[in-house]
Length: 426
Image 1 (spheres, helix red, strand yellow):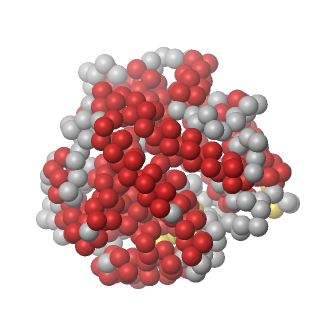
Image 2 (cartoon, rainbow, N blue to C red; image 1 turned 45 degrees about the horizontal axis):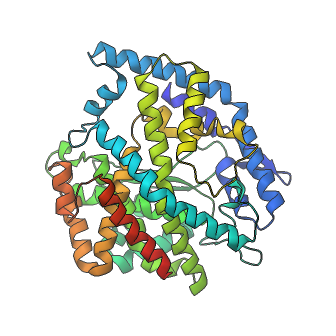
């Protein structure tokens, strides 16, 4: 049943200027200067999703009921409690997750309002609409970091080489074994991931590149996972190579931030490089509310497994509005917003796996703070922590990386202030 999600989503395409595009490929039109085109494409994407609204709703309802039954059969009050044990979450609780949600509201949303307000002024608009968030002002071309999958690979190797030659060797080894499938094409499953392969130790990277800035981020992100796979491969037992997701995502997200200083391979002009870094830092901050939304939504869904589709939609809208930036005008778009959750693969395929991104993003920002003070020490900590695989507990792995495992509002505030300061410098 979980696989049905990819089958439904993989078939979604829209037509723009007489040509067919997957929804991933169509995303590039949201960077266009032509505001009318942006709105048209945004609406086409959303309307295409609406066509499968019923199928997605039915599928999710069935999955929730099945999962609830699994939990009850195993003697748990609900699927959330079951899943926390199954995921091996011994180092934080649901209360920590709720604390994280609150911290995002307090310390991240004000920053996001500033980011979008600045964007509105830059574009010279009265109101910023959802189809404006990726756009650049007239006369500023969208970033074009590479033309095809081969170029994306080659430039990534150059970037990794400058950071640490071992990182580049990891990618070369994967290329040698034909372990990359990078470009988007019709009928290809959505998303991007790094798949560890225990025999050779050289993982496989799958993604849907379409020549956009976000693809560079995905590539270095999955490249971070790949380096983790290589570093943990030397461990004796296969079970040691199964590390907690909260450290796995530190490996990938920290790599996004570490590599920023070496993105010259992708951008020849200083202006483009600055814009790319700005885009990356905006993304680092703006992802937090979405993580909180998806996580909070799941807690409600599985605490109330017999809910109706109407109740689910109402709850989704309530949570969505709670974490939405007031700087974006969503008026008239409620029908689209009501099914916003349906584009999140994790809800269907890997339930409760999402808060990890938030926890790990905090770890990644912490490592980046170290990197800004002492690059070689930060990379040494990074390699040391990742080489431990799953042989230590989560707080111990964070400690090995020179980090605090902490979801408190105070800690999150410190990290957000640092990131905001780095954005100011750009």
